[in-house]
Length: 118
Image 1: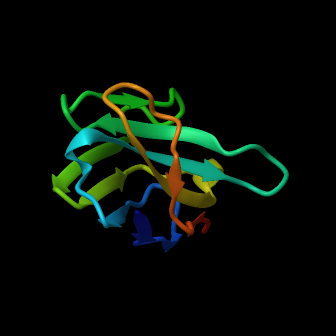
Image 2: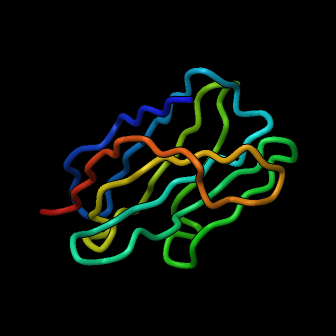
Image 3: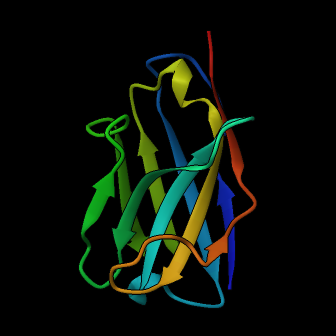
């Protein structure tokens, strides 16, 4: 099981970014795929997850109505981030867990930096 994130970068406040998580060694249809983020000195926090078997999604309150998680195909999970704010600056991690309900990842990617600044 391997996860690789891409799509991070520098964006101005109010802008958009799309993050990609590519899975290898498995397909995500029986996994819960999630995105977390972490800033230095703070714990990693859940941003959003999607349950493969049902398509059900859940979001942190801080990103609800701005971010959208989706499974584009059996190996790619995308996080569309709109109306970005400076407080969204963090390293974003993709996670996976073989489950139909539990979302805390058993596998992690290496992370991708997102910086929101003018």
